[in-house]
Image (tube, rainbow, N blue to C red):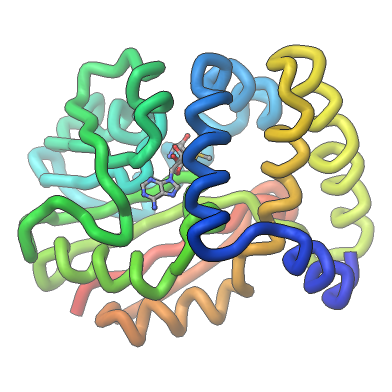
Length: 237
Ligand SMILES: C[S@@+](CC[C@H](N)C(=O)[O-])C[C@H]1O[C@@H](n2cnc3c(N)ncnc32)[C@H](O)[C@@H]1O
């Protein structure tokens, strides 16, 4: 998709309070099928992407790590399995209720975290950046709750820059995924929103610069699966 097409798509998506409400209610709605649909949509690859993101975090066992916008808590559980002390925060009561992980998950807004300053060694976030209403405010909150030298790592769905891979990505995410959402989760609206919502995600360098402005150093980014998955990491100054 060309940049103007991406811009047009974004103009059709909700912003501000309307986005916040629609994201929360949509995740409440899809929660019961979320884990299963994740595996289907990613062809089971999401587990490897999550492990890769935790490798990027690079923290030793025993570290206290926040899973930001944890959903049903897959990353939080993977952290616990690796010996970290993890907690998750998400604003969707439905996603938290659908979770069956052993890690504590609490309800809260990423833009106003109910957590003390500098208490965490690390923060991770999976597939949530594009769902936040205001990314700079969220990055400030992540900076606030991390100790100096603490690590942040996030992954999210994005669109490849290579034109051929963009076509493959569009066939799967904009064609097959909404169809699978209709057939398997009976929710075509949610599963057509999910791929369209990549239009919210700023370019990687803009994200890295925003992390710098929020108080991070050494912001890095790279992609997986031919540019369909973005991995972002940085260190709290
Ligand atoms: C695509 S899901 C990802 C869930 C999980 N992190 C994962 O890797 O599967 C996006 C999550 O972000 C949450 N979310 C979006 N905006 C939020 C906010 N402002 N505060 C807390 N959670 C938020 C949604 O409720 C949803 O659970």
